[in-house]
Image 1 (spheres, protein in one colour):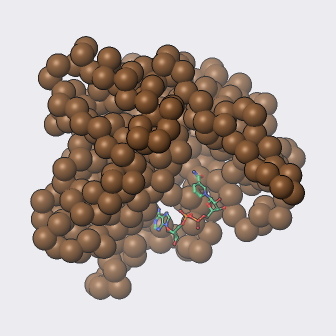
Image 2: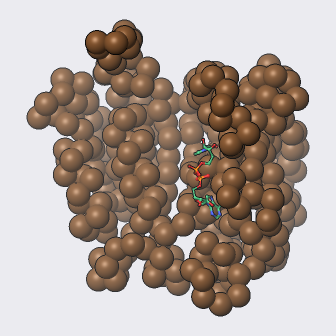
Amino acid sequence: MQYKVVVLSGDGIGPEVMAEALKVLRAVGKKRMLDFDFKEGLIGGIAIDTHDTALPEETLSLCRDSDAVLLGSIGGPKWDSLPPEERPELGGLLAIRKSLKLFANIRPVKIYKEVKDLCPLAPSQVARGIDILTVRELSGGIYFGKPKKVDSHTGMDTMIYSAEEVEKIARVGFEAAMNRRKKLTSVDKANVLHTSILWRRTVEKVAKEYPEVSVNHMYVDNAAMQLILDPSQFDVILTGNLFGDILSDESAALAGSLGMLPSASLGAEINLFEPSGGSAPDIAGKGIANPIAQILSAAMMLEFSFKDLKSANDIYAAVEKVIASGLRTADLAGGKGHAVSTSAMGDAVAAAIS
Ligand code: NAD
């Protein structure tokens, strides 16, 4: 089976952690006889430096001609003084999401028992387990609604959702719940917002197609509180663009390190996979970044784009094994014991596969 994958390593730690994800994909490819066709493209600061734009047309056409996109991370202080629309974040990341019509962002957050001390919550809360999948609507809501404007007196944004948009993301949430513990919490603000009233009605309607999934609705302010008080109550969190942006970062903090957290953004035709964190300029070039977020993003690509659960599970299991063996990059070592390099962690995960 041949998989055409576009590799966009980007800036900062991006190329360092991407090298390890490709190493692990090659290991799983060898084991499962998968034939990867990796094509490299440019995005972000490195694309600005070479092509004068954060998202060159060549990169977009490479993506459109592939089966999946594996992204590293973009941005850094070198490009921070550019006008916002030219910067890697807006001109690269938001632009590629928009161009590829990515509408669902999926972020799993799981705490591995061997590193549970990194979780900022009390041990009694962590003991009940943390394994949450946030499904966030990515292409609508207040970030994109028109009109929007700002002048010296008024700032205005428009929050708008159609039933069709909500139905589409709700199905992603319910399908994900069916593959997990069959529990879905839909988060809205239906006591105040009209978009949320529509959101809740629509989720109720879609829920009828998934009678095995138990559904509850929660206001976003309460959800933010419950994530801290008792994260074990959540399986799948389904929510809109704005609330998902905030809640997925809040739940990311529970895992203890951004270096462990992958993500997937699903589109109608193509999906994109990337770590939840950024380009980490503070540690870039030192060979100490944790490659696991990028490696798990590659596993999500096998699961969500190629529906190859066996190969994805090889990677998930290899990561668990390596963490259980006690190997730690600096972010996981918490100042205690010996921390291994980015490439040593990648080597260990690749070895655990074969
Ligand atoms: P960041 O996620 O890059 O870093 C936050 C902290 O987490 C840093 O201390 C960093 O060292 C640590 N960290 C992140 N990933 C890690 C890893 N794999 N291993 C070990 N530690 C890790 O966020 P920031 O510092 O706010 O942003 C830095 C740059 O990244 C900015 O230019 C920002 O715009 C950009 N950014 C890009 C993306 C993306 O590419 N998707 C996302 C967020 C931020």
